Amino acid sequence: MTTMRAVRAHARGGAEQLQLEDVPKPEPQAGEALIRVHAAGITPTELEWSETWVDRQGHDRTPTIPSHEVSGVVEELGPGVTHVVAGEEVYGLVPFDHDGAAADYVAVRARDLAPKPVTLDHSRTAALPLSALTAWQAFTEQAHVHPGNHVLVHGGAGGVGAFAVQIAKALGARVTATASAGDIEYVRSLGADVVIDYKATPFEEVVSDVDVVLDPIGGRTAEASLGVLNDGGSLISLAGPPAVTLPEGRDLSAEFFIVEPERSQLIELARLVDDGRLRVEVAEVFPLEDAAAAYEFGRTARRRGKVVVQVERS
Image (tube, rainbow, N blue to C red; front, side):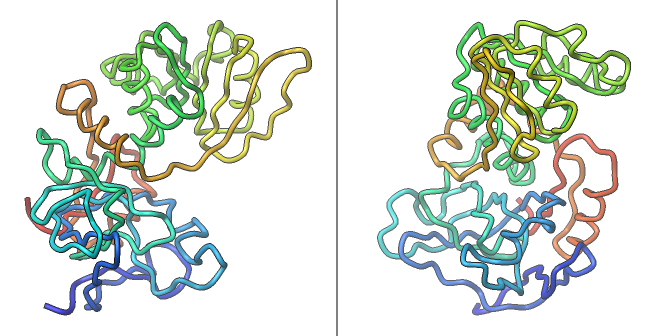
């Protein structure tokens, strides 16, 4: 077979630009593995990212295939691949300036792939890479969370927040989270020690002695978070470079980062899943031919968990 089904956008825009087409099947280049996609996780905002539409030199990338979280089976290996083998079930994060996994096949750098969790099917595995890697890298590379640290997670029921609560607990931290009233019990079930209804109580009035804040919101939330941090504390922003003023005379940092694919961390996340220490939520699963509807659902529906496109049945 030399062609495959793929969801593509030929012009900038939203879900209305996505269409299912027959396109050439990719061939794995040196260092790449060709993955037969079983499921792909989607992030509705990726259609707003510049990397979706242009490469690092600013050249137009259309037509572009979205969806950068993949779970599937290694079909073929390019020259020089040593990290995976043909027939292996794998998962990973496809670089954002690369064609994604909303297709029958995707070619991915083999060093970015890891064995998928054995306790999850492909659809739930595809909900893992982006948000879980973001939380993991925030706490292990940016803030260096240690046992006994106090971590504040804003939006504890959100896509990254739900993983962040669980990962912070796995790293031995004490976790406080903010959430809406309807999500309080859910966030507690993820392991948060304290959950604050952010609409009822300003978190800065009841939280203190925090070592690390994870903030996907920005604005007033970021500014108020500085006041609850201990000296030496870190604000890790996921909403963009933090527009905050660090107070003079205090040892605080405010950082923004963009998640990167990382095989060793995917292996660790899979271990946490298989050990029962990391729960994965899926909001809805759509077939590949309904990918546009999946993106629209993800953008508009109030949901808990990831929206996933199923390409091939597990």
